[in-house]
Length: 189
Image (tube, rainbow, N blue to C red; front, side):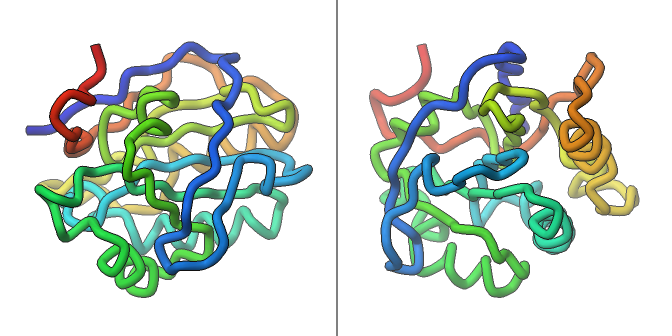
């Protein structure tokens, strides 16, 4: 069943985190984004058709904007006991397939997903240089059952505004995707 993002209030500070890398590399934290002009935190999964539909375009868009000072972090928070296609090995495979050049992290406890109020995969949270939420919403209008090109048009527009120091006018179209696969007892209240 498709779920919309929770639409966290704009201006909300980015929650701190330190998580292990899916590829076994060193842990990565929000502080590791340094003085990036903007930070994009994306909750992803390997098995979700909504993510699969946009993953290659996401890899291209994030690589393009990395050159402009945007730090991207991908986070996999699904319960891998029930959804083994979202375990570390499969996330690494996905990163290679999709061309992800950003850190792809594991949130096994789901504490980070809860702190960010992630609801679905994909779920996008764009923070400005002060690490305040400037945009939350869709990547573009591409969905598993439509012909809309996946080019990141909606996210690109938000990124351009944030990099220019401008607010992203509301309303923001919520992200739509597979619900985060919560471990029993972790579901948001």
